[in-house]
Amino acid sequence: MNALMKNDPEVFKLIKDEEIYQGKTIRLIASENYTSRAVLDACGSVFQNKYSEGYPGARFYQGQVNCDALEILAIERAKKLFGAEHVNVQPYSGSPANLAVYLAFAKPGDTVLGLNLSHGGHLTHGSKASATGKWFNAVHYNLNPETGLLDYDEIRKLALEHKPKILIAGHSAYPRQLDFKKFREIADECGAILLVDMAHFAGLVAGGAHPSPFPYADVVTTTTHKTLRGPRGAIILCKEIHAKAIDKAVFPGLQGGPHNATTAGIAVALAEALKPEFKEYARKTVENAQALAKALTARGFNLVSGGTDNHLMLIDLNNKGIPGKPYAVALEKAGIILNYNTVPGETRKASDPSGIRLGTPSVTSRGFGIAEMEKIAEWMDKAVSCCEDDAKLAEIAKEVEALCAKFSVPGIE
Ligand SMILES: *Cc1c(COP(=O)(O)O)cnc(C)c1O
Figure 1 (cartoon, rainbow, N blue to C red):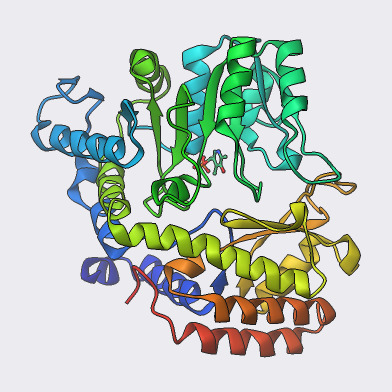
Figure 2: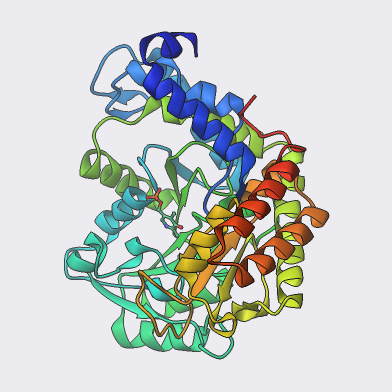
C-alpha cells in the first residue's frame, strides 16, 4: 500500500487502524467474516477500471476480452460449487439481488410471503421499511413463540390463503436448518416461485454443513461476504428455465455495469470454497457455534430454540435483566463485537430490543476452537455483571486482546 501511504495518509491510517481493530477484537457478528489476502488483492485490481454492461459475449462496450473470461470463470466455479444450472454473478449486493428476483417474477402490488423481520427475516423479505414492503403486498410468517422454530403448518396455511407469487425461505437470524423439501411442497401447492435466500448460510451449504437448497429452489440468492468468505457482493443461482428472466432483471432491469473487480474477488473466494479445507471450515464453524451455545447455556443464557445447528445464535436476555443494546455496547468495551437483535415474541422496540445475535464465521476463520469458545462464554457472562463498570470491561478487553494476539488474522499481516 505504498502509493496509498504516500498519497493519502489519512485513509491509509484508517485502514491500518481498522486492521489492528479487527485483529485485537473478537468478532462475533454473524454476518461478518475475514476474506483472504488473495480476495482483497483481486478486489483492488485494475478490473475496477472497466465498464462491461451486458453479459459475456454480449456486451455494450468493447475491450471485454479479460472481463468476459473472468465472469465466465466466476460463473463456472459457482455452478460447480453449488451444483446450479444457471448463475448470475453481477448483483451489487444481497439486497439488489433479492430485488432482481422480485422484478423477474412479480409486479408491484403482487403478494410475497417471507419470514417476519422481527423473527429473523431480512429487510428485503417485505419489511414495511424496505422497497420490497412498499411496492409489494408482503405477508409474513413467524416463528413459534414457544419453540422458536419455524412452523411449516403456519407457512402452508398462509401460502394457501394468500397465494404469493414468491415464497421466500431464508433468514438473517434463525439458528436452525431449513427444510427445503417442505418449502418446495408448499410452493407447489400455492403455485409460487420458491426463492431461497441463503445469504447467511451459503458457506455452510458450500462446505456441506447445511442441507443444500438445490434442487428444491427455483431461485437462490446469496451474498458472497458472509459465511462464503468472499468480497461484498452477491450471486443469483437458478434453474435454466429462469435464466433469461433473472439475467434481464439484473441487467438492464436493475443495474448498469457489473463491478468487475468484485467479480474477480468472488471468483477467488469460490475457488477457495471448492478446496477440501473449506469443508473443514464449515464443519468447524458449526462445531464452534454449538460449543459456544453449550457454554452460554451453562451460564444461564437463554438461547432461542434452545441452541443452534448452524453458525449463529440468538439470545433472549430477558432473564438476565439487561436489554440487548446496553449489553452489546458493554461487550464492545470489552472487545467483543456483536449486535443487538429482536427475539421471537419481542416486547421492546427494534432499536432497543431484548436480545443479541452472535455467530462464529469470523472467529473460526482465524482458527479459534472449542477452548476459545469457553473463554468467550466466560467473558460474556462476566460482562453481564459489570455492564456499567468501564474499568472492569477494559480489563476484559485486555484479556481478549491477549488471546487474539495468539491467532493470526486472514488477510492481515
Ligand atoms: C445480509 C442479507 C441480505 C442482504 O445483503 P446486503 O449485501 O447487506 O444487501 C439479504 N438477505 C439476507 C437473508 C441477509 O442475511
